[in-house]
Image 1 (tube, one colour):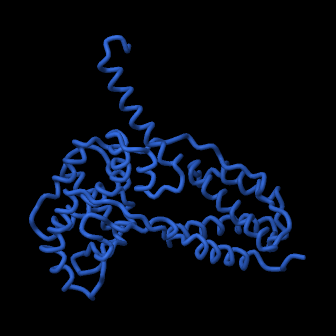
Image 2 (cartoon, helix red, strand yellow):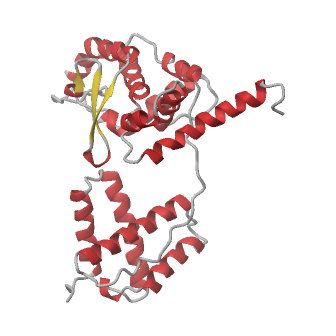
Image 3 (spheres, helix red, strand yellow):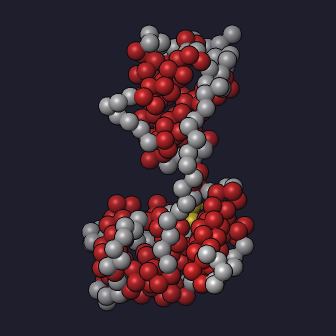
Length: 305
C-alpha cells in the first residue's frame, strides 16, 4: 500500500531529503528544483498529478522532449543532469513507498564526450599571479586569494567560504567540499606569505567597514567575498597578464592537479587533495599530462613523425 500524495508534495519531500542526506549546496539544490519543475510541467501536460500516475512512457516522453525541443535546445551535459535528477527522484519514490515501481529505471542519460580539464602552464599561472602584485589592500587580498586557489586546488566556493580559523598553523587549510566533507590541504610557502601579508596589512582595514565576520576574504565593505567577486578578481588578473585566453576559477583547480601529476605526485594523493570521492575522476588529469608528454615527444624525437 503506497501513500497517496500529490506530485508537488513528493517533489518537496525529495528536495528536503537530498538537502539533509547529501548536504547539497544551495546552488545544487536550486538546480534540482528547476529540473523537477520542468519534469512536473511535462507530466502535468500529460494529465499526471500524482507519483502513482507516472509510467515509463511518461519518463521517456520527457527525455524525448529534452532531446528534440527546437526552442530551447539543451547541451548533452544539461540533459544528462536533468535525467539524473529525474532518476534520483524516482528511486526516492520507491524507497519512500510512494510508488511500487521505478518508472525511470530504464531511462538512460545521453553519452557525454569526455572533456579534458583545461589547465594553463606553470609560466602562464605565474603571469596571472604576478598580475596582482600591488601593495594596496585590494591587491594584497586578490593575491592571497589567487595564491590560495592555486596552492590548494580549492573550488572557488570552498575558498570564499573559508574563515580565518580554517587556517591551521599557517601551513594547513581546512576545506569543506561537496556534502560538507572536510579535508586538510597543505599551503605552500608562496601562498602562506601572500595570506600573511593580507591578514596583517589588508584584512583589518576591510573588517572595520562591516559587521564582525569570521570570513577570511573580505570585500571593500567588510562583507565576505562572494563567488561572483572571486570570478571577477580572476578575470581581471587574467586580463592584466595578457594571456589571450579565458581563465575561470576552475582553471586554478585544473592547473593545480595537472601540475602536481606532471611533477610526479601520486594520483591518489591528488584525489585526496581535490576531495574527489572517486579516483576515476582524478585520473582524467593523467590524460592531460599524457597529452602534454605526447606533444613534447612528437616535437622533439627525430623519428616520432
